[in-house]
Image 1 (tube, rainbow, N blue to C red):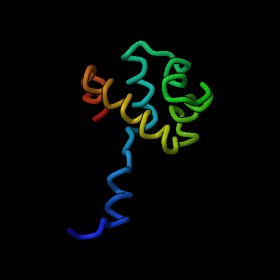
Image 2: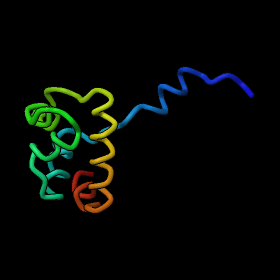
Image 3: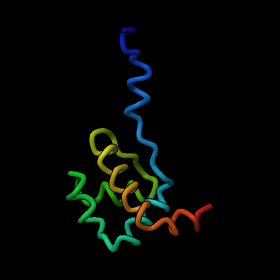
Amino acid sequence: MPAPDPVDDLLAQAVRLPEPAVRARLRQAASLTQAEVAAAVGVHRIQVVRWESGQAEPRNPQRRAYGRLLERIATRHPDVLETTS
């Protein structure tokens, strides 16, 4: 069995997030507050404000958790993604 490729491992962990404005619309579609998202992901509310305004990007492990949250919201509210295309 070949040895694991560190580049492939790194890329497998990479989480692609929607644009900041879409992040905010997804959260709002799920009727979640920034404080609720922050508590679920393990950061302060101001970090969610920055992520949604494009002032900052989340880092792992919060990035993975935030990405999972947004992905699940998107499956429940696909209309949010359709209006951004």
